Image 1 (cartoon, rainbow, N blue to C red):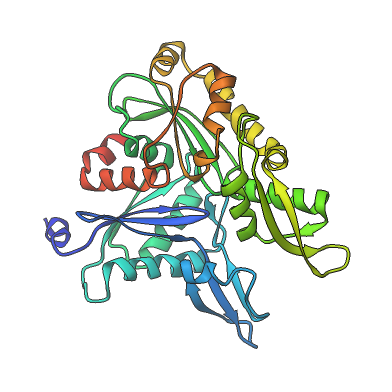
Image 2 (image 1 turned 90 degrees about the vertical axis):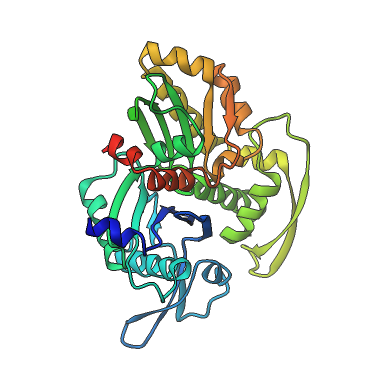
Length: 341
């Protein structure tokens, strides 16, 4: 009864705590925040860390910080790597969307990768509670993505979701509100960026930062030879002389650079299909494979997966927000969480 009364005065929220971005959904308002999961910290002479900026402001500092300031991602490969900074980052997002005037702590639904250990789950709960949560519920990312993509997960039929985030790719077969089979690999959007950085090092003796690599991925990244030929001028540092230099890169070489991480993603999908019960496999043949997450927006990646599997592949209408919207729906309709617990 008390919890129900408190719910009338708090702004309950769902959080997609991602390696690359954190999205926040507030009950009754929808998605209200989408910022990079980055914290800029300043080190004093005693070794203490002071928070300088979080989110968009911290990302703008990447590669531009003085020596005593460091831009850090507190999550790596979908799990918490720095508990203190994760807590501070959560507190920042809570205060940003909830305001300091609200005296009732919010209830939270937080996404976690499938297969997260109990220790890692406890770390997420502790960080959220320390940041100001009244009550914390955890939901696995593949389930949240399926809900956000409007799949009929409560029915006794098979649904396959491929969620490509910043640090991980989650492939899951879902039926009757549960995960029948799931596979998680530590390959995501960040690894595509790293592949581009390494390619430019090897082929052009050019060093670029992650922001430039991300821009190249967005403009030239592709997974199919049918992609139209494009070029882009890239600025970086010459690895031989150390001076600034510009080179022209094209879409064909970027596709070549991305071959390895794309191959690993496709193998995760085909391997999951091989382990799916035949009865559910027939449903997936009819419904197709649903892709969510920022990585699913890589040009022609859906085509490459479809050509390999022979199945239709559909990118969700709003792949970037599918997970947080699914978590928000679970927050709005707590029956979803009860069925999954």
